[in-house]
Structure formats: C-alpha cells, structure tokens
Amino acid sequence: MHIRRTTIGYPISYLLTLVLAIISLPVGWVNVASAALLVYEPFDYDAGTVLHESAATGLNLAGDYAAVNPGLPSQFQLVTESPGLNYGNLNGALSEAGNQLSQTLGTTAGGITVSLDEDVVVRPDDAIFFSALFVFDDSLNGNHLANITFTDDETGDELSFGEPSVGIRNVRVSADTAATGQLIADGADGSFTNGQTLFLVGRYVNSAAISSDSLELLGYNTADADVLPATFDPADPNAEFAYSLADLDIDFAKISSITFTIRGTASNFIDELRIGSTYASVVVPEPASALLLVAGLWLTAARPWRGRTRNGALQNATATLMLL
Ligand SMILES: [Ca+2]
Ligand SMILES: [Ca+2]
Ligand SMILES: [Ca+2]
Ligand SMILES: [Ca+2]
View 1: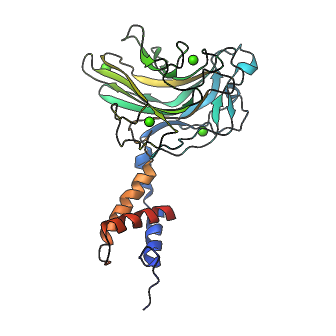
View 2: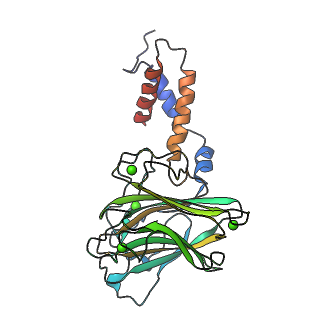
View 3: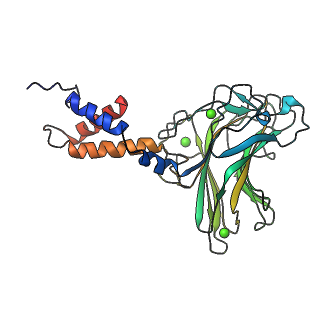
C-alpha cells in the first residue's frame, strides 16, 4: 500500500492523528495548569473606555472599577487605548489580549481600583508570582509614572511594583505593611530608557520563619530576544535589573484589591497583569508546555520509523507545533 508521507518524513495520517490527539487533550490538563493563574487583566475593553465607569472583565475581578480620586476631572481618569502591549521579542512569553491602560493628560496622576472576587491568600510558606507589561516614559516629565499595587483591605498592607512617584526613570518594588512598619523599597533611577516596553516579573515569599520573607522584581526588555528562564531566576543575566527585599518580615497575607496608577500623556502604559501561584502561570505559556510534552511522547513513540536522527526528530517536533 502506498502511504503518503509529508516532506518531514511521517505519513500524513500519523500527523493528523497526532494533531487530533493534541486537540482532544483531556480538558483537565489545561484546567490543572491554568488553575495556578489566579488573576488576569488583559484590559479587554473597547478603546476609549473610561475604566472606573466599567465593570471589570478580567479573571477573578469583581464588580466595577472605582476611581481612586473620583473628584478628578474626567481627562485625568484612566482609559483603555488600542492596541495592547505585547511581549515583543521575548522568547517563551505568554500571549496577550485586548488593549492597554493609559492616561491621556498627565497633569496629575490617575488611579483605578478593583476588588478581587476571591482573595489571593498568601499563607506562611506560600509564594505568589506576578507579571505585567509596562511602557515607561519620563521624557516629557520626570513625574510620569506607572505602577500596580496589591492591597489587603483588611489590614491596609500593600505591595507595589513599577515606576513610583519619586526618582527619574525609576523602577522599584516596595512593601508597606504592619510588619515592615513603613514603606520599604528596592529599586533604582535610570532603570529604563524612555519609551521602552518592559516585562516585569515578581515573586513574593511569605516565610513562616522570622525575618525570612522576600519580595523580588525582575525587568526584561521586550526588544531583546531573551529566552525567559523556566524558573524565577534573580540572577538571570538576560534581565535588565533585579531588585529585592529579603531577610525581613513583610507578612503580607492576602490580596483583596488591585490599584493601577498612571501619570502620562498617552505615553505610559500598563497591560497584561497576571498573578499566580506558580511562576509558569505568569511567565511561561502552559498550553505550549503541554504540547511540547505531547510532542515528546510522540517522538518516543515514533522511534520505529527508520533513518531518523536526533536533529531530524527535533525538526519534526517543530514542524508539528507549527502545524498547530
Ligand atoms: Ca492587553
Ligand atoms: Ca517618573
Ligand atoms: Ca535583556
Ligand atoms: Ca512571613
């Protein structure tokens, strides 16, 4: 019997079977993986939407956004703009959706707050991971900024990351909790060049031991073809900076609301906020990881075909993933 083979050497029927097998992966796989993702806000609202007049549609966000300062004139309130930010040349990043958050007139900062449907609880010895895309630009005014704050509304404790209101081209990560007693931060001026799109990745560890908590932030330049590491790596040489608070008590116990703050003239943006219980849920595309695993199983199963080199097998896996 004549079996049609593709240019990569496998019968077409085999490839089709593989594709169908991947498409029909048990739903549980995807659910187990995405269950680690606890919050996702891609700003999937029509361009020009004034956020504090809108119901929040991101994952695990509840009710409407509220303006931090409702008395601000409407031109200072935060709006969505098209298109959204993307991960650029970063290799291994997640996909993006929707638009981006902006302020069109930066005479004074605007802020919006949204409650979580289910609090993100960080028990002793738990860690949470978070990531977001930012465009920072201080070229018109050093007072411009863009940052994100996680709040425990029961205690008033806060964690924050991004560009604060102090410094020039400053990026930092900070904690202001009962345990820290005051706002403490690690960061530096000159962390970005104006107009850069940065992918910020953070980790907060709430240790059960005394003086053992940590809050860390890595910054990646999306213009670089960096391969994102498979685990949180504060020493990653591809990162533009790494800031950390360590060996202290932060004891931030839960996120019950999130605040986005921007001061910019359609020049500073925030997008694609993710919070998860695993690094992979906020940095590495999990469905692709599952596909790679399936591709690996397939390569193992495919060994009876002859004349296959290690390189050939890798090419075949790439070709199959491209088919998807
Ligand atoms: Ca987006
Ligand atoms: Ca600034
Ligand atoms: Ca880099
Ligand atoms: Ca602790």
